[in-house]
Length: 223
Image 1 (cartoon, helix red, strand yellow):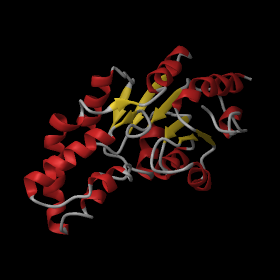
Image 2: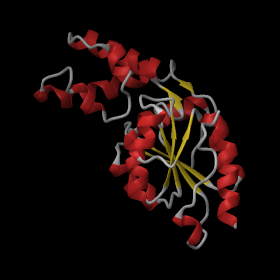
Image 3: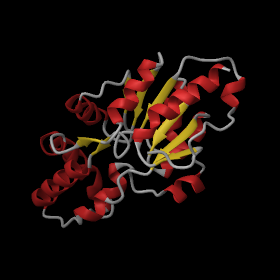
């Protein structure tokens, strides 16, 4: 369901030569509810290393790079090794428990139905991101991993994305760098007020309202 920000705002892209529609999506907590899987992977890492980790706290702040979170639990000289091990054990623990968020499949399909390209740009390790998508039957045209916040903007610009959909203020910053319109959903750790303050152009409660919003946006671009 959409918030009050339902109508595409005026945007410079409308006044530029019309490019083929390309929409970028974040992965964790935008397309995929990866909290159960991430929790399972952290529990396994904690058991293996003997390092106590508050898993509930971890999954409440999903978004930034893995190393940022691990630095809360491991000494600085142990973060890189812990991150490598986490990524190794992730497929066995995190893929099966994670689910598609409401409207995720329909939103990717809506881009295709309009003749556009759907890309995923995520901070997650790219091979693990692809495992999630394959397991859930979500098939974007391109997946780009290991990028966070402003760095996401570089990939979005490279692929010509006009829209980037995410759940975190870091995603809003990435959209800004790319010159893309920022569509934010409140399914992650950031609430609507926080996302608007960060500069989101549109805020939706979840992706169920995105296909209708996108149809209006594309019709507006055609004018």
